[in-house]
Image 1 (cartoon, one colour):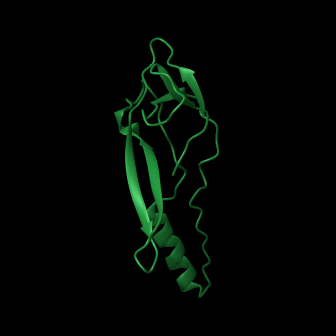
Image 2: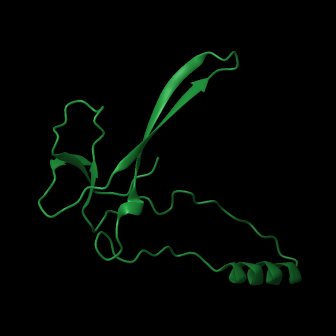
Length: 119
């Protein structure tokens, strides 16, 4: 991510800010957290991005696999890959408005993302 001036003809997506307070077992404030969430829903398919694809299996295929394993009395193992698709670089240019409470930025500057981001 880098801070750049918004190029002409480009549109920056908005954001929402979520605040969260963490307390200990005695109800004392431990820390304040702020999360900035991009409003990706404001992007238009074919304009801001092309078709997306996530290689996941069909539920019916999973049921057939489990049924076959059960019939053969086989053990089934699984893994959980939560962040499997977060590291590729972006082909599109994505710009997001910068929250006004972040100091050191100018009014016409935006964040340009080079990789997908999550919280």
